Amino acid sequence: MGRGRVQLKRIENKISRQVTFSKRRAGLLKKAHEISVLCDAEVALIVFSTKGKLYEYSTESSMERILERYERNAYVEQQLVTNDAELQGRWSLEYPNLKSRIEVLEKNIRNFMGGDLEPLSLRELQYLEQQIDTSLKRLRNRKNQLIHESISDLQKRERALQDQNNMLAKKLKEKERTVTEQQNQMAQNSSPLMPTFPSLTIGGNIQVMMRGSIIDEPDENQTRQNMRSTVVPWWMHDHANHS
Image (cartoon, rainbow, N blue to C red):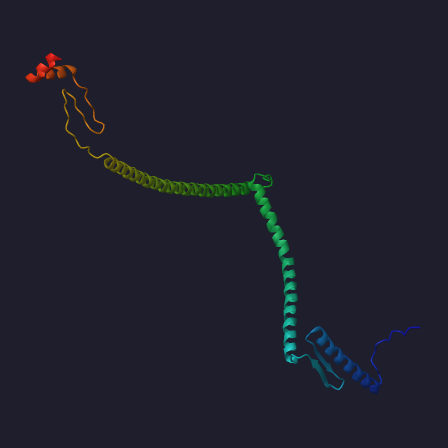
């Protein structure tokens, strides 16, 4: 049979209680040291005996440092718990107020849309009409403001585009004038003045010009007259008659 579960209770025998305390204390300190070494944990152990004697164990860091860390964490957790409780209490109080406000707003929206008007009195209808008129005035003012701002922006863009267009037109005219001047200069450089050569007349009106000028054909009648008017020596006559 297996060993039954031992019921934990205070040991009445003083000597047995002291012996058990010594054994369990040593085992507890050993377990604390083992967990600190094996798991790289910070461990702090404090034990007071029945006589008030202190037994403690801490890892390489001091006991004071571990206790300060414990106090900080305990305070933060306590604050979180307290804050959560306060928030829950606050939300429990705010929920009915928020719910009623939402209902009123939904009812006002339905009235502005023209619904649920039957339960309203004459004074409530007049107040609703006044609110709608005020809203319409604000809406129209805002719309007109946006329209004026849009027109002003478009006018600024138009002026900017006009200035840019004028600048481009000015640059284009300057470019055309520069191109025209360059073409005129090139034309002057490529066609220099041609020298004029004297005409050569042989037996008639034959005129010879150099480099592409017009060459006049000889006048036959003029050639004959020139031949007739030419004085022939006598020896040439005799030679002509004998032949």
